[in-house]
Image: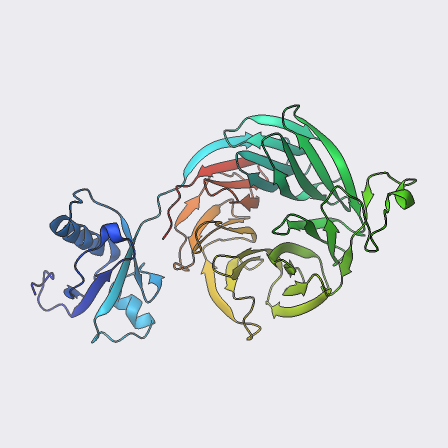
Length: 423
């Protein structure tokens, strides 16, 4: 086999290129390369092989996976860190590089944007001036919605059709409000005011079939509520009569769960009857919403500010006060086992959200003014820094695979267009 090394004294290593992306397959015979080869040299090599063995004549940018992590250093350094023998043929898997997300519109608000949720082309935002806003992904402002009496800390879509939508907002005024939106008339109605928390709300999450929502607050309680328009309590009898005198639209929780010692900062449904919460008390808890108990607990060493679960890879990512993002397997029996730590932010990480279409990708927003796009196979460096905010990033969302969206203390929402690449 011809030597690809410039200097024959350089130690050699045998590699084999492999890929799951059939259109980029090259012959899989072993090649000798110098041990200090770096990703851009591997890229040149794969593109040369592609030109020889296929019709592809234009260069493609690839990322390289060795021992299931992206190569970000010289090959020798990477394999020494992982204790791999240089005597063996090393499999080098290559995948098309994720294209850089493109900055789109900036949505200007009157105050800090602390909550954002995207559904199809609609962006719902919640602000510190107690207002909600609806925008299109093209940056057109549709509606401002007053109603809360304190800053809004979380928002979520419940349903959306061509002519109507419904969503929920959770506020420091101790309530969550369920809203109905008539899209044709561009008007909203407050359907239910959810009362039961004794301190400000921090988090809200809707279950998979959109019938229930979970809220978490500074009173340390996790509460479950019905999202339906029918007002019923657990006995099935109408509660509207009881509460008519106070407020015709009041709704009470169907279940309240105790367990956290400090504020609940993040909530996500991980199954039809399972919720995972993160808290300032340095713990994450997995709850059974039907039995009302804690199934499992994971202890951290710092306050958690946010959490998200991916049904694609069945893993949890958390945002923390120590600048790190951590990936956990919530079903792992070793309670403190952190699978991966992602380090690049220089301040508190405030928000994390998984891709809904790619099991390896997630975004994070932090007090260092940056949103970052991560691949779980590259823990030491994000794929991209998505800059633009001039102050702290307070929230982010990637529910629509086409748009990464972040809100911040610079009173703006930033939109980045993401190209959909499945590896």
